[in-house]
Image 1 (tube, rainbow, N blue to C red):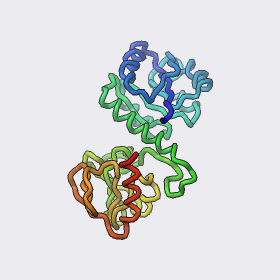
Image 2: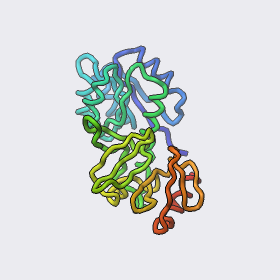
Image 3: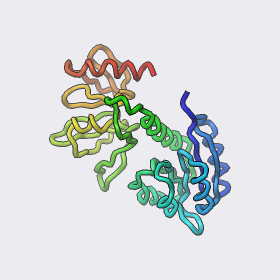
Image 4: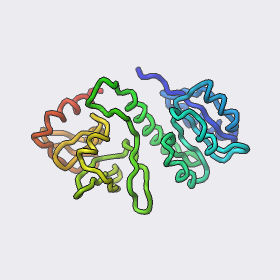
Length: 245
């Protein structure tokens, strides 16, 4: 059984603490170990209790959430909570920030964000003695969006496919992003066995497979791919490990 992940809430709005506690009550893999009404109080609590996760408001009197981000332990993962969407852009380049929740927090958005965070925690639990798995677990990639650089979370990735000298990363909402790397490089970046190369031009997320019949797989977007003969031996044990876990 996986251990519970601990978290602390930092928000100057008392009502926000109460509403958030109600929203998160159903997530039994999380355990609240503290709450603070300001960033000054949070500094000592974070040092003393060392949580896995911090839910952090930005606009607070005296010391803002942005100020707190500069001084806390870099091992703590942070989900920013704010009424102002602009703070998503202000914080997304900070590698500690693994999610953004706009207030009032919607249950479906919280569920999606926590799913991404738990994927990251699970990747970090991969044993280092297994060389076939990623050495530096990641939960997202910086990609080129239509107007600016964006984050794409691995939990949302459907597949990667060759496009000239770069790779197209296709999200499960069918939105496509260009990534400047070879497919071989993507195989090194993406965590195995969650992502696996199935032919010379495609890497897929095993979690997004809907059906499999022999060398053919159907993803959740109903597209069908053929596993190449040179890749089936690697695919088979990886696929079995995922479906049996």
